[in-house]
Length: 303
Image (cartoon, rainbow, N blue to C red; front, side, top):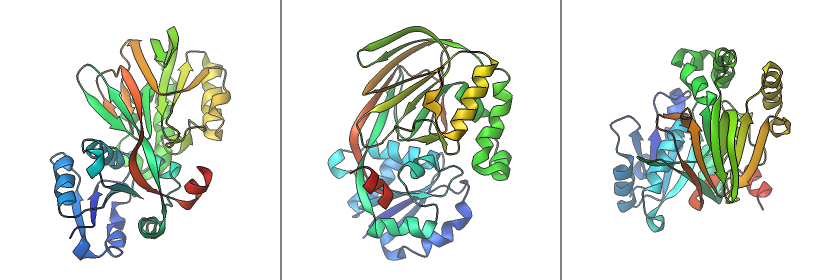
């Protein structure tokens, strides 16, 4: 019987600690799958469920969580197993939102003794694709920061690699003219640098970009960073690092259930680190979509 299916990413930042995890879970009730481009996660999870799998464990960073969430959302909710996250990546932003400890032994023990929450997931659509994400979709100049990242930079700088990679982008910010529909409220012909659609609180190395976001409130946090001058750049960056990002005059903030977006030029997004080349046109929250193991502090904060 397979009680647990572990999806591991051998290229993640803490993959060398895989043996720690293997020593905790009994081998006779645990199955491992390495995540790569050839892996059919939906089929693998379906097979594991038939074999008695009750928990799917994403052992990696936000990209691994993103891949597992997308696979789980392809399954019928009645047969969808629980999700656990072991923070073995570079930044582990969504794990931080769920108050999952960085210590892998403690994170593993949450699966046996920790509390659970039904977390929201965000569905994103364009004309030619449909995907899901759990943490943050970052569009505009945010994509350029992600493109600056290299494996060497992640190894050397860790979570701070996102700040390091953003330095060259800040010197040459592009402007996007957007029309945004937030539920029943419209914003037309806005000039902006970036748009964030947040379900979790932090992004790009645990920088707090959505301090009011909760993955259990049934809402999306929409953050539009409007165009400005060099002093505005300095204020946005400094307040983002300090965690009071929404206080900037250049930031437009809303909490909604659905967002529609049109941009010129087209605005690409990263979904928890995965770059989407086609412009998304709709984001919608899927409330309480996946039952997930969380840290005890998360349970207390969300009562």
